[in-house]
Image (cartoon, rainbow, N blue to C red; front, side, top):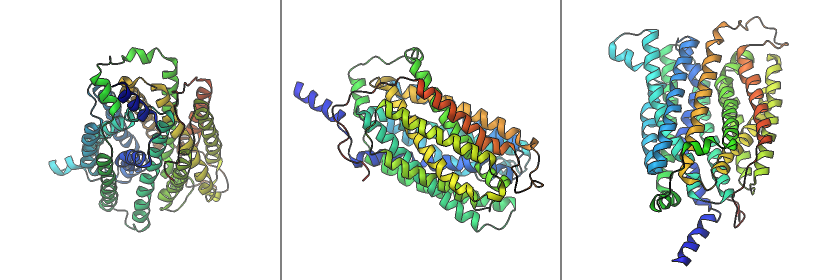
Length: 457
């Protein structure tokens, strides 16, 4: 028995193999591809079909609030009962069923036989909330699995890095579909706009569901969680985490990182079309470049042996790159709009550095406290969703009050709320994130062996 236990401990601290990492990494593809569509095109879509910026912001906020509340609820239940894969499957099913209605026509309008701005807002808000409930259940189950799959600190960060790499694949898939749709779209009628985005949603769901199937077939229910319940471990209370300074520091860094990526992504399409006067297809091409470079960097980061100091150094590097990019976005005139493609490369590198290390900090925070891992990921996601939802609501609500850019001299910079949202807000969040990261003290879970081989060679 002692020998068997020793062998089990050894297997849990050994680096994971390629297949285990890849099967885990693809499990968030449906969430990622629908999330990319949600943050990049929802506000554009809703304003294109006639909703006011404030009503579009209400739809976005309703989804974010539903998401934030669900991650806490789901996290608590997962900590109590486990069953990561069941939560993941149920959430994925809800996402697949509801997402097409978020970008489809107003279903309540069709049911009641009439249309009004209020009914449209209620209809889109309802399906936005349902979509985000499923999205949150999938997210918290998938993220909290990391600490229960392995005790190896490097493998935990590699799992997060692989997940981030496939996030880039999901985003690139979306932008490839969107580029084709936007490049060949000629009509501006509301019905054609709805049909255009509906097909983007259908194809996104199909791609994501294929990868969810791979995850469910190729990934086993984590042993560590099962063993914890079998051994009668006492569940870690919420107050245990709240008393830790490092919990609040990691939470703040994670929230700031999500604000950097989500706020910039949500207003990027407005920025390239309205402020830089780029072509219609640029609202797919520019984010695609960002995610190509994020994917490349995420793959490279998987080859590193991660320590707490390296996590902090790479996060700080990503934050500084975003500050540089934010200044460039803020000052870039429309006559030099081709420079945006260069800035997109820098943003892609910065996003990967910040997201991989920001997520990796959560694994370092949890350490060996496996019975509280879902709460940690759920509570941090709650703060992320609420802060992003409120930020986007405020910014989008005031967008209609900003002056028109039609008379702006292309050779000069004309400041708008969109420019501040894409450049200034993310840069300030990145700066604060770097300051907090430099002040925190992360503790590395002891490793018996370093990473023996590249996991995605």
